[in-house]
Each structure stands twice: as C-alpha cells, then as structure tokens.
Image (tube, rainbow, N blue to C red):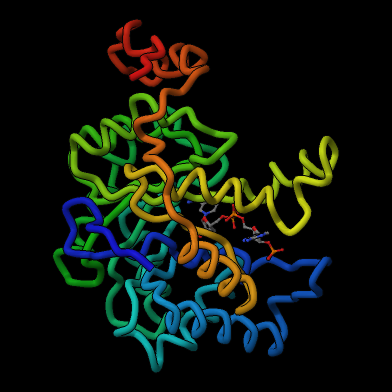
Length: 307
Ligand SMILES: NC(=O)c1ccc[n+]([C@@H]2O[C@H](COP(=O)([O-])OP(=O)(O)OC[C@H]3O[C@@H](n4cnc5c(N)ncnc54)[C@H](OP(=O)(O)O)[C@@H]3O)[C@@H](O)[C@H]2O)c1
C-alpha cells in the first residue's frame, strides 16, 4: 500500500479507503442483512482485514443503514481506534444545533471521542446555490468549525455527487477535504475541479471508484467477457488509482475477501502513466458543465494536446 499527504491535513492516507456504506445495505446476492449479528461479524472481519493490510482510512456516515454501519465500525474502534483515520458524515440540511447533536450521536455509535474528519454529506439531492449559501452562512459551517474547536473532529470536509456543487465551498477555503463522484464513467471533475482542489490544497477522496457496479452492469449487457474475473472492476480501479490528483479511493467493500482482492490488485498494479496528464479526449463535452459550475472557461484548455 502507498500513503499520500491528504491536502493540508497531517493525515498520510492509504490510496484505498474502506468505504463502509455497503455495511449498512442489504445484499440479496450475498445474503448480507445488516440487522443480523452474522453481518456485524462479517463487517468486523472486513475492517480488521483492511487495517491489517495497510488500509488506514474508514469512511462511514450516520445514515448508512440508519446508523448500522457506524455501529459496526464502532465495534472495531473499541479496540483499534489508533490504527486508522476515522471519517464520518452528517446531513448538511440541518441546523447548527442538529449538527452538534448528530456529531455527538455518531461519536457514541463509533465508540470514540473524536473523528479525524467530519463531513457534510451531499447525498443524492446535491446542493442548489441556496443550499450552498445556507451551508456557508446559515449555521452548518459554523457548527462544523465549533466541533473542530472543541476537538470533536480534527478536520472538516464536504461531499457531493456532482463536483459543480462544491466549487463555492472549495473556494471559501473553509474545508480541509472534499469527496466527489469521479470514476471511469464520470470524469467531469477532471478538467477544472481537481485543479481547483490542488490550488486550494484540499484533500480529495472519491466515492464510487468502482462506479457502484454501474459500469459492470453495462458491460454485462454489452460485452460480458469484460466482466470475467472482475476485469471491468479492475479497469475502473486502474483508472482511479492512476490519477495522482486523487488522494484516496473510497472503495465499498463488505467482506474480507473483497478487501484482499483489492489490496492484492493495488499491490501488484504498476501505474503505467499518471492519468492526470492524459488528455481527456472528450473534454469539450465538459465545457458547458464547467461554465455552469462558475469556472472561467478558457476554450484552449479543452483542446487536446499531445506531447
Ligand atoms: N459522500 C457521498 O454522498 C457518498 C455516496 C456514495 C458513496 N460514498 C462512499 O463511497 C464508498 C464507495 O461507494 P460505493 O460502495 O457505492 O461504490 P464502489 O466503491 O464504486 O463500488 C462498491 C461495490 O463494488 C464491488 N467491488 C468492489 N471491489 C470489487 C472488485 N475488485 N471486483 C468486483 N466488484 C468489486 C463491491 O460489490 P460486492 O457487494 O459484490 O462486494 C461493492 O459493493 C461508499 O462505501 C461510501 O463510503 C459516499
């Protein structure tokens, strides 16, 4: 495993983070039911396996399985809190007092007295300009800064599916970290947003690096042989791992077998080329999206340059 400096924080994060969302979600395919003790034990084994094999970030949220994911992680934190950076999230559409209370409830479920990163959780609704303004001026940011002052979290972050929802927040320089959706089929952040994060020295983690299985389902319909031996997942992971602007891939894994599969893949994969330097051939497609996100768009940035 490799470790990189996470933006302006003191965290040296593993390139792979254990994404703990699947711990809170039932899976018909594997028979995982997060309400059962059996699933708690499986999650515990997966977390131990991740920590034993070099992964040092756990990313969860208070609403994954209505708190079940945090409780599963909390079981392990009773004995291994010092072995990892612990990240969780809360709802940013809350009041100042609700965010303080949500943090205290998460600390209890996670059996800890502080988080390394506490994040405002974008969720699927995204942030309208009004919500962004509310976050910065209506209470949520103040609550997050208060939690930092009290030592209940060391750093604060914000997450959103769409990078365009986070431009104002990154420019505000108030957040230490962002988590966005960026992967082999969602590359919009690759032209301007990741550059902006670098300029502001913000830690970047990506959700859904394995496309949450969407790419695999599409390949199953189009070219099933690409799914054999999980090739399409490895392709998705290779893409994300090879981009130096991404500090850590928040990869959902709910069993020790999955953890070992991905750790082994990472350890054996030689990054052929930094994807940050590979021109995005269809980048013009993203010009309009960047404009809407408020970037000062320069058409020449979208011209493919070859070395
Ligand atoms: N901030 C936000 O709003 C937000 C939103 C979504 C996600 N997240 C974070 O990002 C993490 C990742 O998102 P995600 O879990 O939706 O998507 P993901 O990491 O793209 O995909 C996870 C799924 O991929 C499968 N998988 C993993 N490694 C594989 C491999 N080597 N071969 C084949 N399949 C493999 C697993 O399926 P099996 O179940 O079959 O093992 C797993 O459930 C979450 O856990 C969460 O921490 C954050």
